[in-house]
Length: 640
Image (spheres, rainbow, N blue to C red):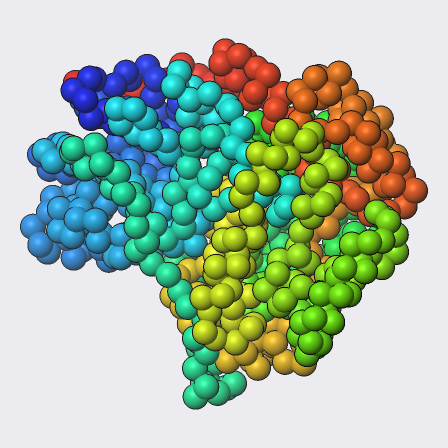
């Protein structure tokens, strides 16, 4: 696991190794064990290394036999030993035992199609010295991040946005489309960062910079939910058990201690169950609890840990324990509205005291229809039977009602067509609310793009059932933009590697063939996964209602954090930025104090303001303040 960065110029100028070293410095937390840089007249590649596999010889950048192909890599390739044996049989010679080295030899054999051979999580940069060609790859599901910026004379890329901000050509100017997406869906879009001109390489995509300076991005992998009607429940259950066991087995490859995040939900419990069968020593498990019993799930995690003989560790999170939330902006890298990032940060800190790798259950809800919102949509589909003119009239009534009036949002929601209704159910601030939240000139720029468009295109392109369409949308958007972003950033903040075992692409491709009735049966979500875990997990764990990773923010915002939030959002610094209407922010705070649940809206505003203070208000020297404790490593591989 590493943080990677690079700079390739196409106009005959030589890139500065100093810039790449600065980019790596701000990602010290992603790789505290080592640093390496490759440099030639056109390219500079850098990495920070967190040593997981091949602790002795696994340094990066890694080359082929004659030094004409170089790579830096973030992630894990779980089938690298099989790939290595095949490549050695084809005559390739290896000088390390690391998974990284298979990449350069795969490139020699297959070119850009090397990615089809990989089983794992990754972002990869391959530099072909002779062709002056750069290839960038991001894993199929978007587990690992990669940002890039097309420069006047080349391209720059990095595992984190803050690394690109070390380049003088890139200023932290806001992307208004990303701002609109953030305040609609809690996160920035799939292909655009919060900074104008800095893009994200999307999951399942590769980017190719040719020697003439042209850069193209193309999709190399996709999964379609195409249920197989011939797949019976018994066959699906048996195959699912096999694939989960296999996925966990390959995810256990490590030369350092590993454990698991355990919430007591069925996904993380299934992973821990499989780990306990395959590990010689007790599984180390980690969970977060809250003093508020309405949010506390410790009893379920402890129950699962006891059943499988795990060495369980728990931290009870109190509001006064989270004094580091101002530093979260640095590690989150972008404004982020999902407040469960807070306990994810703290459980990562707990785990880092014992292990360097954790397996997680992320992805189970998207694969097996585990979200309650699927049940809500199942009920609300009856609205589609109402004639369109009647629904339009209902919507008009809702819009005519006073802001905050009971029933107003429901009437407007009911009037929408099915695709927009599903997106509306996950919307933070609707357009009319954004018009009140943002200053008029800011809203005018934000409103130039519709954050619903990407989701609508995905849903409208689906020829399958409504459930398959929604799961595909969430797998493409919600999973990488929210769930995987949160876990990657917060685990790497404490220099531990998180591995979502259920997102092994072979398991994902099989899950997409499971019939709808085996995923959502009546009011039972994850029906087939629960059937597969019958006899493996305790029945009370299988049957317990889904609760999600919730945080008692409403209580904290009305109590311990009340003064902090108010002072932050209504400060002179925030007002002078000229982005938000302070009167409307004050209104939101008052409504929340009176009992309306606006904790996510307020948290998103807090996250945005903290990001602005960390990255927009700071000088470049100040941006590096969290890296000042990094040892002054000399690069492990420098080539002139």
